[in-house]
Structure formats: structure tokens, C-alpha cells
Length: 238
Image (cartoon, rainbow, N blue to C red; front, side):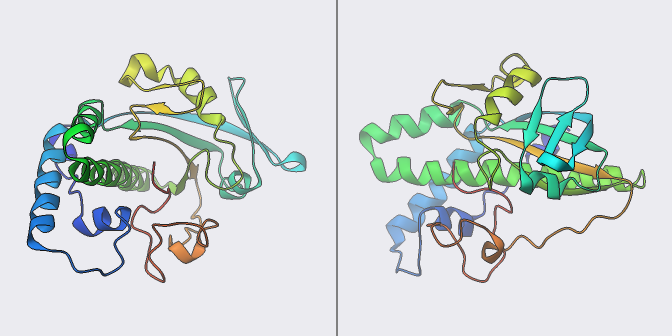
């Protein structure tokens, strides 16, 4: 996927506002202009990178375990097992929008805190849009092969431990491939990065409509949309 693909990242203003916890308050012209400036700046500073691998999987129903064949990785998760129950393969994706946008966020945090906060929301929107674009592209390519994909699922969502990110990053060697690392405190660097798992099936799979109302974190999430479809489809703010 080339630059034309990356140029499809739109940074939707409504999504930016959602991450800013906008609840219908009045927005003055100055703030509107600042949001527009931040969206433009974020588009200039993001450097989307990704890697993905396809692996055969082995499912063990007795303990809800998913084993990546040819590796030592085993996922123990009822949610992930349910997602992959009709799949014999999975795709593991690592994505990031890079360090430049992180530097901008940090720079403005010292001088223009409002701009820093808005840029952070723009970067969060950008990484989620990037993941959506990748997922849509995979869906199209695999459908041409008579295959189907599930929604994406990330460590830290539902009952899959966020510790799993460490295993995946080491397994994929993402520090070398795309510059994505993780700290001892399980914070991914760059921060605006996503690890996700997508199932591949030879038969049509039921794809759940990704609404905030269907999310397990609905009651506690500050970024929910009520009864509308969740804009980021899979994850909450990073």
C-alpha cells in the first residue's frame, strides 16, 4: 500500500470532537479554527506504518485457548476464542502513525496546552482511521479469494490481557520493522499505535455491528456515542 492509501486518512472532525469529550457545547470561532489547524498539522506530521502476518491457528475449546502455530504464542480469552471459532487462520497487525506527531503534541504541551490536547485527539483519530482502512483493504482482497474476515480485536479490550502486546511485538519484531516498541509499563512507543488480531474464515462469518452500545466498556467510557455506531469500531482512546 502506497502513499495514495495513506492519503485516505481523513481525520474526521466529529471523531476528534468525540475524543475531546464534546457533548454539544457551543464552540467559538477561535476554537473551530484551532481544531482545523490541528487537523491540517496532524495530517502533515503523521507517518503511517504497518506490518501484518498471516498465521494458521489451533483452537482449544476446553480452556478458550488460541495457539499461533509455529510459535510459542497462546492467547487465553473467551472473547477472542468466540471471534475466531470459525477461523483456521488469523492476521496479526501492528500499526503506528509515527513519532513526529508525538513530538508535536509534546512541543505544544509546553506552550499551547489546548493545541496539544487537540493534536492528541487528532492523532488518536488518525490511527483508528488507519486501522479501518487496513481492515477494509484486507476484506476486499480476501473476498476476491473467497475468504472472509472478522472484526479486529486488540489486547486490552475485553478479556484479552494488555500484556499480550509485549509477546506480539517481540514475535513480529516490530521495533526493527516499523519502529514500534513497548515499555516495561506496557506503553507502546509511539503511543498512537495499535496491535490487532483479525480472523480469516473460508465461510461467511457473522460480523457484529460495532456500536458503542455493544461495547463492554460502554458504561465507563468517556467517548461513547450513545446509540450511534462507534467511530473507531474497535478500540477506545490510546
